[in-house]
Image (cartoon, rainbow, N blue to C red; front, side, top):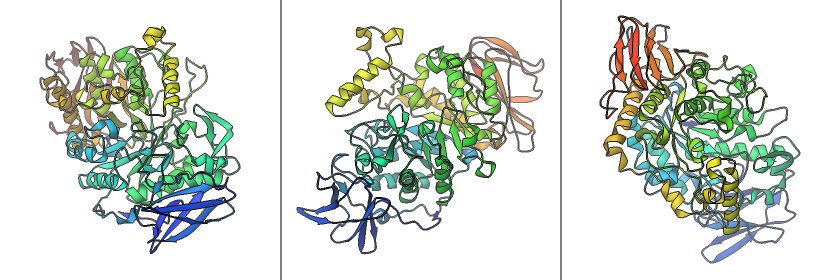
Length: 624
């Protein structure tokens, strides 16, 4: 692994030889004081300001050694933590700690990155993934994830947040991994160990807003936000008004911080549709280009974006923004509509048919410019010029579970046979699959919305959560609304923690076995991996059954997958000579098997209930 080019961080407290350079963006300050505390001794320094409102002072390393605490006083007011703190040991309201990022002894020099075509992402929340709820707790499970067939873990946002627990999307100190999970070197140890096991690490970052408690950056620099645009969280991050050049610089510096100081393999950018930018140079293109140029192996950039914009993932030379992938939620929405019948909110825009599912499997997403039922406005653009692998698809993720009233997972309400069929379709699709922690064993635990704000703000969050679900008939009455989990309660967080005793029990072990087998097939056969082609072969055989054909590099047939997501029925399977390498009704996956009837001599396949069959055809081998 090599940096490209050499880099000197712009913001924060950074060790440079026998000195520590303190630099902070504080355009609001007329006078700024740096306070450095080592033990009981507090020393004061006067930084100098440049024309962009960035203040700098260089301090001898023995005055500010690693572990020393520091803060800034704006115009002689109370000290505040550095908005670019590398660590906040006492929380987001406490003083910052000087961290020597170069002191960690990395052992990943041979790491060569991950081929995007082999990418299988596993999204996890550090606090609820393991019993310890720490970076060290994740390390303890990395071999399990490797053996499952995962090639990359995605850590939900790490930027420090107020209190002891949070999803991470209320982060306020963008450069400081949360002290709830451990120290900075604990995160480095996690990534170093992941690389040793052949696993990439992606970090979810939030640049569209700051959390509601402890966000001191706008006090230092009001130009970070603008009231010219508005988002669901209030004023937008300033990407195109006066002062935006430094705001953009701050965010891009943060992106590079995770790549350089932590060796992250890529970033998932939260809700990029809320990054309002009407300037001549798209911010997402600027950020992506900076991350791609940061080092070898080239880091990846993924966007969560509801707009279905091909521009996001088109190459820069083709007037695109150059991202490596985009969260394509249409796949989830159709599957959820088919399996659980959801028809409210954005699910109204989907009928839940195999025809819709086949269209998504052919091109990456469904809405490509047609008007939606909810708004009557066109949504999406044509994806036929971008590779299939650029669409990140899932049957559940933190949003699609945690934003439900009770945080219930799809498999909690779906028929188990239909769930197995959906998983087979996901893990043999030509897109990039993402799993949410615990889905592989059908975890019984929900993933609920939890916070730990100061009491008054916490009460507002509780009231807001109840108002959010008031339009749902089952939560319309005050008594029903009271059943909603209290985001501020300890038990809501604890209820969301995975139970690692479950995978060894029969029902959960069967689901785990299916995931392992499918991911084993995907790893062993390039034809089953994410595709560089802009389209794939898929078609609906009736309202409930879809067929997907996966081909070798030379275009010859390799695998054909039939998945029936509802009910029983017979479909045409005119594929000639083929071997069924897996059915979801195999005894190792189903406690009460109801195997489909396979009659390839007559080109027929009869499902006695929902299920899936993976056929190997032509030269494909029978076993992974």
